[in-house]
Structures are given as C-alpha cells and as structure tokens.
Length: 382
Image (cartoon, rainbow, N blue to C red; front, side, top):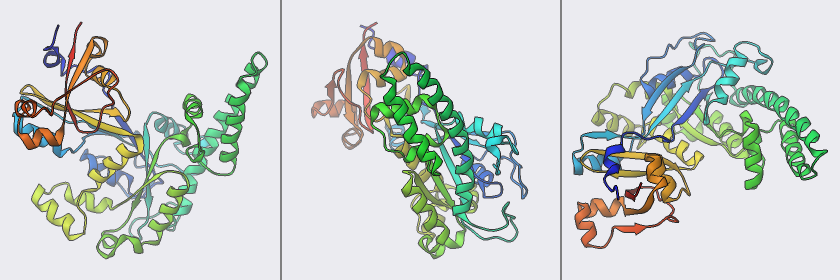
C-alpha cells in the first residue's frame, strides 16, 4: 500500500479547479481600476473608451485564515493557497453582438470565463467621462445584458433548429425543444438565461448550449468612498442594482474601486484601521471571493504537513474519492479511505496526534461528502 504517495505527489495536481472570473462593464465604469487593485497587476487605466483591448489577466491567492493557522502549526516547506484568475475584458458598446467595437472579441472572452463580475458605475465624477454622458446603472446593465442576450438568441435558435431535425428520428427530443423554447422566450423578453428556473436535467441541457447569460454574475456596484462613509444604502444606483440582481438570481457586491486602489500599498495593520473607519471588516477582494465561491457552489478542503499546507477547491457535494482525484488521479483510482478531521477540532487540540487520542480523526469511505474546512489525509493503493 503506497500510503506516502500523498507527499510525493502533493505538488503535481492534475485536475485542480481554477476559477476564472471575467470583469466586464461599459467603458469608464472602473473595471481596470478595480482589476489593478485586486490583482495589483498594473493594467493600464485611462479616461477614454477601449483603454483595455487585449484582456489583462491576474492570478490572485484566495485569502484563507485557516491555511495561515495551519502554516503556523506545521511550519511547512511550501504554502499553497487556492487561486482565482481575473480577466479584465475590453469595454463593451451597443452593437457588440453584431461585431461593433470590440464586440466579437468581448463575447469570446466572456465565453471562456466561469463567472462574470459586472462592474456598474454608481458614482458621480465630472472628471471621469461616462460613455453615455450620464450615470444610470439600470441603463448600463441593460446595454450589456442586451448584447449578451442577442448573441444567446442567435445561438439558441441554431440549437433549436438542430434539435428539430433530430426530433424526426426520436420523439424524446420534444422535451428538449420545449425547454429551449422556454429559455428563448425569456431572452426575447429581455431576461437572461440564468433567470429561468431549471431542474437538474434542464441545467445539463443549458450547459450544453453554453449561453453567455447562463453564466453566474456578480454585479459590482462601484460607488464613491463618500458613499461608504455616509452609508451605501442611501445610494440610489446601488438600490437599483440590487433589484436587478434579485430578479435574475445574480449576486451583488457594493465596492469602491478607489478604496481598493488605496489599500493595495497598505500593510495589514493600516488596512484594518482604514477599513474599520469605513465600517468594513474585509477588503473588497475578500468579499468578492466569498461571493464568487457562494455563487459557484465551491468549498475548500485542506491538506497539511511539513512538506506543504494547501487549500484545494472543489464543488459542494463532492465525495471523498473525487476530492482525492483533485490531488492526483492515483488517489482516486486507488482510493481506500480518507482520514478526516474538522479544521476547528485540529486547531483546538494543536496536533493530529492529540486529535487521534480524542477520537476526532474519522475514517471515511467512498460515500463521504466533503465539507468545507475538512483537513484530510487520503489512503490509497495503486
């Protein structure tokens, strides 16, 4: 039994989930400023449309205090947090679905992302020119959503035509057509595909079409620092964004790109004081990542030892063998059991040995569903 292969292969993951988030919005709403702040990647940001042409990419470590604590306990040779890839996608204009502006490039870049962070301008500033000449979050959201909807309608109509041909040979495809027609009707009424309620089978069908408006969305309501000082609920644009998000099953995050830009250079103590003065417990990046994990149904399990402490991202509902497979395919193929302890139990007792003495390290089999914060050692035989 090759019990120690976990250590040998812990750095060679084959199927780690890498979350890719596309940051979109109209020109001059704060996309690139926000991207720069959360990735500290130095993407160009200027006061004119189409400043971002080729998408900038930044990889960000997922903040996880649990991992920090485990690193204190084990003093590992390697510390590996989960990561998220942010893509700053070119600003979109009316007619993008027909190739206007950078339309085709914009749409293809979104298609490659797991979820969309849609930055919506909710602040006034005469020095930053809005492409439409005024501040209107509802109009701005509708402008982008319309272009995505038009692109989706074209794609879905082609899928319906293809499925109708298949119907001639097998009547079972009628149910697929009925569902596609229901989604198409929503699109024709200006509603994104994600607003359509689906059962599991219909979700799978929707996944096959890869519609842009079926992707999870977080609306980042970009407000001024004064809004955060005075109370964000008084910002009418933010209230409008919240209504739209609720109607289409999307997330919403109040954020200030200017604040995020300011705290990038601060040390931890300065940052904590600055955020506290604004009534915030966490940075916009931390809040954005939590919102993304919740929206995409993701959790993290942890592995810990002298060689490495590491966070692994998996979907909620993943069973132990499949979680093991995220580390290496051998782990899933030869899975025997998982030795699992809850993070809180491990930390409170101070060591795995003490936890075993207390009987808190569980031996779980193939049907065990992983929980967020599980600290695990996989046993396998290959």
